[in-house]
Image (tube, rainbow, N blue to C red; front, side, top):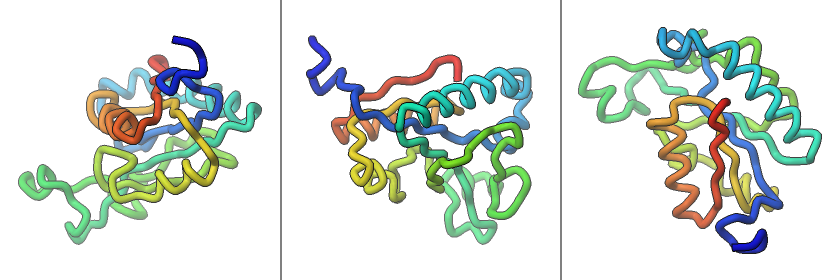
Amino acid sequence: MDATDSTSDFRHPALLLIDLQRGFFADPGLTAWRQQITANCNRLAAAAARAGVPVISVSTVHKDDRSTWTLKMLEDGQGYLFEGTAKAGYLEELELAGAIEVVKRRDSAFWNTELTTLLLQRRASSLVLAGVATDTCIRATASDAFAANLPVAVATDA
């Protein structure tokens, strides 16, 4: 396969920083990695910006009235990352100047958001994903990107 094949064409990528919010880092498993993940995401975002690559920050935010809750949240009766709360906010040390913001209500950054339109407007033909959680939100976003014929790379240290 050469660089012009659609499965490996990263000439026009967009960087998605997914769920780098305080609420996710309350988890002890992520707390230990917060500084390293944030530093690596900041370096990645700075390099993308220097290269003219769109940087899109994706956050999960819900309404406390249950109207945006997932089935699991409704089942448990426990919502999280409510609009306007500290937990829904980005990590303080994250450098997002110039980033485009997308708010999502489900695992995938594509589900019922303006992400596809933003990517088309910026002529992005591939994605680089970084952030949390790899087993849910990054995986779901990568799967939906694949379904949209967008090659995906995951920054494993970010």
